[in-house]
Image (cartoon, rainbow, N blue to C red; front, side):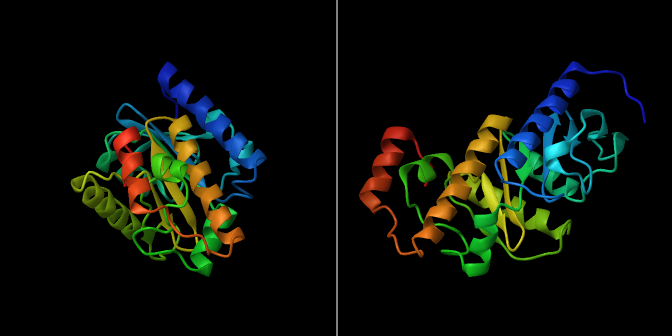
Length: 224
């Protein structure tokens, strides 16, 4: 499947490869777990099914047109529907990352703080950079029903002016998104490290008190 060269697509290919390499090198992904996508105009680039994110090849990334038809690359990840639906539900979402990050998967096994907030607001940067993260009940990898649940949370939080930037899939790990790779990575990293902190402290710390949360909202525009 050959396509006319597109500089924007080529840039997105390079960015996905860079992010995959970085995630693998720092232990956020392993084996062929996880996937990454970028929205380019009406099209989407996504890692192939069963691809090892630390060893991606730009030309093998799957390119899918606005109608969902694959037009280049290896067979798209089984989570393509979820990635496309997130971008459709949140116009600011242009880069989506799903990992099986160790501490976040462990959190789903040990027990989350609540169904609507998998972690308490422990630190100011968690509140400012991540915000509310709901738990999505377990479904098999690639189950299209997950997209319905995720987009429902996006719509509900958007209506309350507390937009979500991430969800946590039970036993599978986080899905995060943002307007670019740097933003999505910042959410993922802060989310994983906060899960690590909470588990290392045996889930004992109390959340930030309401006055502290109100101050973060007033001073920094945090959405909580």
